[in-house]
Length: 332
Image (cartoon, rainbow, N blue to C red; front, side, top):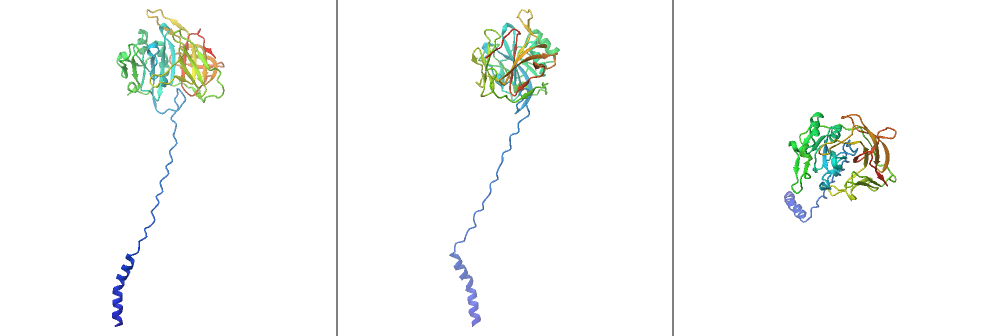
């Protein structure tokens, strides 16, 4: 009898346990905390220094020199503010043009583009740069072959040139740099320029004025906050058409060189860029005098201080103003 009772109790035990457990709430485990990974951004690594400016490059390219128009009808120019190095030099009729060098971080377009002269081609040859222009004098065409210029000529059908139909010839031909340089071989012979950080202190001169003729009176005003020489033309800010920004440079070099009339019907001139002469320098607010020297076609132009040592440029863009020896640079 007792055995039967125990069997009955044991058979009812699961129902009892199930019935009691069904009314109890099951505790859920606490949510798992997922630790988000901490992402530390990698520091930006500056690119290699641009041999024309001493500043880091985002993207290196080929070295190209573009013959840029400076007639009043061509202002404001496009892309000139992005040039690493600019020479302003006289043409026939007392007008000037720019030889604008680009190496890194290229603008899309440059212009307007005008014709070549032999002494300007010397500058391109000195740097082993591609030289972009629209035609040229008879002597210039001859020197292209004689000097083995890396020629890019719209007249010869080279790629990259295009015409702005809203403008008038000969002031409306432009160059797309990426298209012009596509597929070109590596080039460039760079000078051993030494660059330093911007100097501190009060600038030696705040205003610089000079003239090529009464219709072309450039000037610069030193902006102490930016450490830049801001460019003016005939008393007005000289701006880049593409960006609307005023043209500016860290370094100004005034190179005085002999100019000669060649006696041609079109009044062509020659500028003696091989030889030597006096120079004035405005470098990040500091003023020096000295001399320049170039021994032959392929050798670099040396810019020297009064002791005959190479000058040290301030990191940034440089503009070289080539002037007749009798021109005065007014400093205030």
